[in-house]
Length: 422
Image (tube, rainbow, N blue to C red; front, side, top):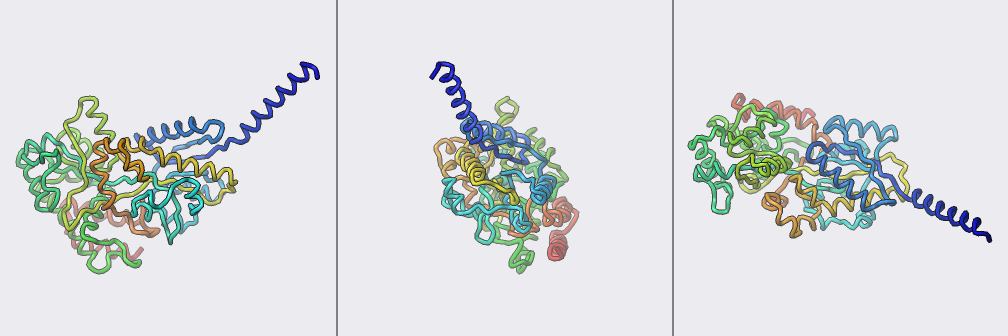
């Protein structure tokens, strides 16, 4: 054999190996709805995944508009056979998606392949992505609402505990005393709430209903039994705070954040996703000493509304076993490496991450993560979920009630009638 032939054959062999390697790489088409700080962090996680799986799996990611536009596009894409291989999904939207036959079941074999299982998740989180005993998504996080607070203003009002947390967190009377003490000390708004947006305030109101063991839906009926009374109680206490000047009125989302960060509001109820805002401002020397804790117990026991970002696989794709294996690797790897996702304020759903020493050092995350044992999700109905019709109906009546223009009992009567008409 001549040297030229050896060289030619060697080059051909190398080219063949390269072709085999390239053909073995699976490209996973990804859709998400993650903007802002969430989007930045998820893009970094995807970059990290791709770097760790070079020549094996490549995630090709696209970010779409949050809310109704995203879910409408998913529905259309499944119908025409052009869905992505993996997508982010809200746990609250899963009953509707299953009803529309949009999601592929995550089977017990899939969970075993990912190295994940029910024992890795809080019971409520696992249940939130299941319908009729089948799992339809892999939870990435829980993103509840929490109480942000200004330690300096609370200290000045004499309502800061030695451990740096607000006083009066264990009762309606105690928390109202804290709000009143802040007002008496000259604070403009003791509590900042997004009272101009009933859809957002659903989170707070539903938490207070949960503190009374209330249910929005029971056996297909809305506000059955004494649940209407419990919703009235929840609206009533918020309306009382408004009437007493203890809570901001007709405040939209950006204004609520601005009131808190400027010091005009001493406390704020908002999502954990605002933690990066506070961290960045504090780092730049533009914020007071602050903290975030689980919501106060206004009624019988702790309870906090939450939703989950999750990973789902759309129906309708003719997915090869190799492609599905790649998709499962993406979901499993990001779940097991979700500590960085916690820097967005979210509580990682994968238990070993939140039980790690690294997570225990993350504040205020580690402080409020205890609420995972008290959290409640939307009722399991196709009418619930982000941007769903339940939100539309209730928000219509929440805004005037929270701002002192409608009686809570009257509002609940109208809400119950309209929800059951759905």
